[in-house]
Length: 64
Image 1 (spheres, rainbow, N blue to C red):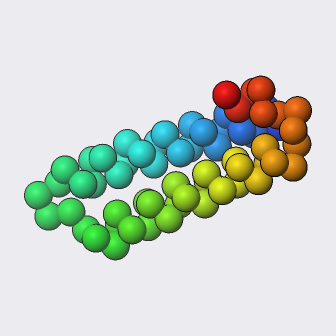
Image 2: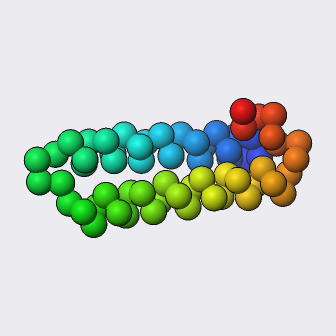
């Protein structure tokens, strides 16, 4: 998997989590722990993307 495709995969996963979070937050009895877990997963993905971009300056253009 190329670096660009890896970043795109992570961005897609982040978007999926964003959708799950939106659904969970609109539920009448949303689960605080599920919301917390989704937010944590999103943060870890964002950090991974950031680390990849910082370690590989050439990948900055593909992440934009």
